[in-house]
Structure formats: C-alpha cells, structure tokens
Length: 243
Image (cartoon, rainbow, N blue to C red):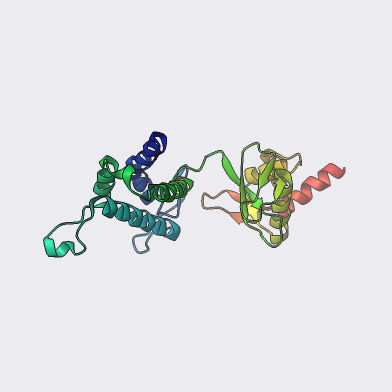
C-alpha cells in the first residue's frame, strides 16, 4: 500500500472517535443539521425516537473496528480464560491507528476499500452540506424517491433510477402533489414554494388576502402561526394574475 493510501486509512481510523460521538448525537430522530427542532418537547414518559439506520451503522463500525483490531493484535479466542479484557472501541481505534503492522496485512487493499465505504456512509449521516434541501419526489412513477439538491441547482440526478430532471420540474411536481393532497403551510412557506415554481407571490400578499376575507387559515402550527392550504393560495394567485 502506498504512503498516500496508508495515511488516508490511518486518518479515517484516527477521526472515528469524533465521528462516533457525532453519530450518537444523530441517534435522536428529531436532530437535524441546524440543531434540534425548536418546537420539540421531550415528555418524561415517552422515549425520544431513534434512527434505527444509525444504530445499525454504529454496530457496523464496531464490527469493523473489532475485526481489524483482532487482525493486528491476534487476541486469544477465549479472552475470559486468560483474564484479558477486551478494550472499548475508542481504545481499539487508537491501537489500530498506531500499529506499525497495519500496512503489512496481506489483504490491506480489501480492508482499505471496506473502510472507505464505511467512512463515506458515516459522512453521509453527519456531514450533509447544509446548502442541500429537499425539492420533491422523483418524477419517475416507478421510483418516487425523495430528491434533494443544492440551493441554486438547475438539475438533479435521482440516486435510485438514475434519471436527470430540472429542479423546477421536480418542484412543480411537488406543488401539484401538495395542491391535490390539501397540504397546508405558513404564509412564508407557501410564498417560497410558489416563487420557486415561477409564480409571483410573497407572504405579505397572503396575509392581506386573509384580512380581506379572500383566504381562510386551515389551522395553526405548533408555534401558533396560521397555516394556509396551498391549493387555496394557488387559486388566489391564478385569479389575481388573470385580472
């Protein structure tokens, strides 16, 4: 293994204690990349829901670390018979990172690729760029997976079916889905979605329609802000533009 690949592998192993700490924070299913949901309340009688995919990934990391540690240090098959304590995962990582035999393992190439895949999966959980945001579902009727794109992106590739779409078309599909399902949003959210789809609309206009009796809220969110059905707002926008 070349020096560059060895340094990369040792870098992953060295950084994993910090990454594991971050993964444990993301066990909370209400955590997101800007912190926790501001309106979330933890009741003492109900556990906070967890991300099972993160639980599985943490177990996958521990299995990989244990396998590498066993390869490098060959502990006895029955440590309880020799009173040798198995160290915690952080100590195993430190031992693997500092071991001089790491680059001399006969299957180090396979190990490198396994850790590359592991590191990519970890970073996809804890290091999603904050500029990415959900834009709607894949337009392929046989797919329908949720798509996300960077702010200002023109096109987006579906990671499942491989098709490429214009972001505006995906947003229009999401707009149509919200209108047909009767979903409701705040005035600001309605205005933002409509603007992304090419309509002229702002939150103040929506609020003025409410004051004039042309629009009625469908409810309130957890902060007490009125929610408006997107179909009602869209209808008012079309009516205004047709005059």
